[in-house]
Image 1: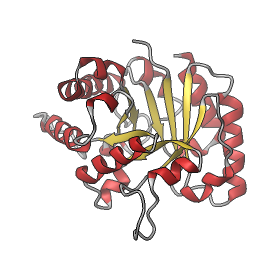
Image 2: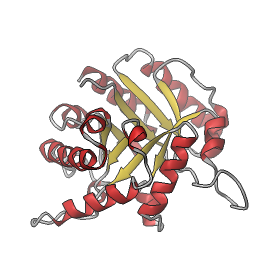
Image 3: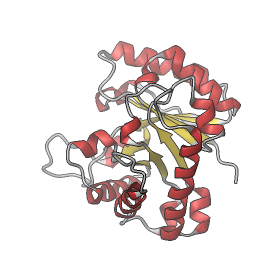
Image 4: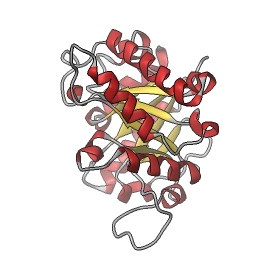
Length: 254
């Protein structure tokens, strides 16, 4: 089944000013609108969401970096999924490794994913092992994480998710030290199998599984061709206009 590739830009707590954010957004839109084979989800800090007009039809979308699982109430500092959607977001990252490192649990990820779906957002659910061992115990870690993080998701909504595989040990490395494309392919096959066991073969065929972890212009083509990823989750390189636009062009050409 042919799926449109998705490239997710996670700006994290960057850039520093609204002017920089607007310039980066404009540069991404100018390049991406000429690339029909990719969708682009740009996830800026929440304070910048109001700067970007909703693109409507097209292939560049606004995304949130996180949402809360409640719709409203006395939750200081939290932002509801419906509020993100009202600001123009179409996607949201859920369960990013940096959020999990702060104590977010699989159960909370499941609650947030359900809330995002109810608000009409497409959740980008992140999973990934901290280390790899020769005995293959990390497969059990991935299985448990996937099952628990998607525990509250109905079968009817499963295929609309995006699963982002981000091995923690590969994050922050350069492309030479990151996971090779063959291993990425094998892991994506495994994730799709776990997904099929939970939601059925048809949902597993339709769900987009992307890769994140030291994604750069020099390895994105191999990740998406040999690695068979449906897209990538890009961190710091999404803030470098020349690098990120080159990555979009490479993804479109695969």
